[in-house]
Length: 292
Image 1: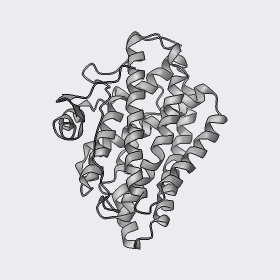
Image 2: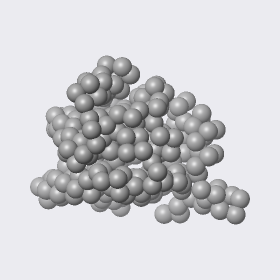
Image 3: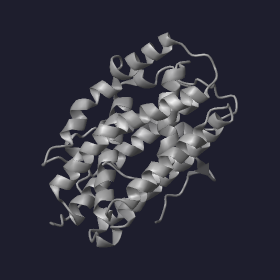
């Protein structure tokens, strides 16, 4: 293992806790993504699985926090944990609104939680961290696609679309934290390759499995045409899952680092629009950042 002097994150990228208020309302459309049952439940499947998945990643990195001596990286760990915890809070708020429309979000949360508990109990701490690196890498490259091509979120309910942009922004900010911690406490390439391979093999099938469970629980009328258009949306045009493949495969390189692809230019436009609109303010000031 080799301890680097500073975390390899661009100096102009700050990982910070933002307390958001998206003001989800009971009037949120059931099919809030382009009026499509298929596309809506693709994103609902991710939203349902995020709280247990983010807890898995938080617990994985906290297990090694005491082994990190670099003060900057330790601060990034604390900011990472704060961001991920707030992601879970906001997705639970959205999931609660969706659940009230008769969609079984709680069932998908519980299914994901049980799966991750089994994985947790059958892995060593370093394997959990390596698995988290793989999960984070997928989230990172998918976030890049959502931010890079506005067509991906076009036609979404305004507040729900704002949540997904915010989540993608913060995934971009902290995309190297898990990787940097893994490199410092282990740095072994084969375990990282191995666990990312299993993430690759199972992640999309699991998301589609949860998606179709949600579609089954949604008794509102669907159609074969909507399913075909939904697969077209995901894999052809705008094709976020197709376009993320080159960036995702770069994660298998021995010399890989998340910030080799510097997409920090995507952060600033969001700060001028959605952050100004949805970030909570207290006493006329921005909400205080997490101190731990």
